[in-house]
Length: 95
Image (cartoon, rainbow, N blue to C red):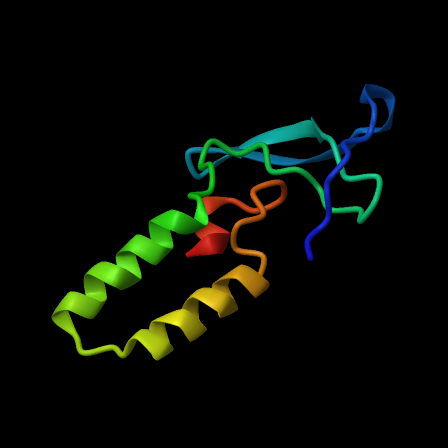
């Protein structure tokens, strides 16, 4: 199971590089999870939810023959990979 992220307080934020629309914008204070240590994503490219990718695979299965068992295995692997954890992941990392 994934972490139920709890962000650190304002005084504990760390200075890290910040990007906006793919361009480096210097440093910005980023919060991190006090439980697992993962740094929160502050980029403009917000991650998509897991349903977007499930729908894409379902649409692909209409064009290419994919058995329902294979699709189910893909969905389970996507869930286990942490693809739906939007706290520290941006869209580029998801893809």
